Length: 157
Image 1 (cartoon, rainbow, N blue to C red):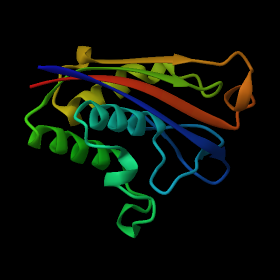
Image 2 (tube, one colour; image 1 turned 180 degrees about the horizontal axis):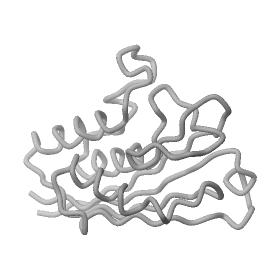
Image 3 (cartoon, rainbow, N blue to C red; image 1 turned 45 degrees about the horizontal axis):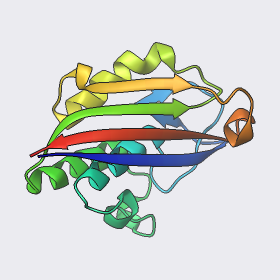
């Protein structure tokens, strides 16, 4: 049996925070605001995986009202998400994700993101597709107020 899940996340860009996307820290003058490290890509992937397994969403499992998740490394959340879907008897087939950001340019960092995320999920790097795009100056992403990510996950039993 195969199942597909979709995830979306968005965080506001603010001064005074580090920028974490895809499990790596990027040099930028602002970072993403959130209860955790606000890694928008990992959060979208977690939601896609959880959705595919009908396990609700990231907020249900890792509430932003719970102090144990304050400033947590999202790689830990992804590892716990993978454990949750494995407990239901699923394994990850592949991930296809897109990050929407005007700056910084993400393409040079995608191979490292793939390696980091694949390692956490226990899959080959070619099972983790990450794409980067802009919104051509439109909307909150175009105004560089925030960054969003979309992800689709295929899981198999």
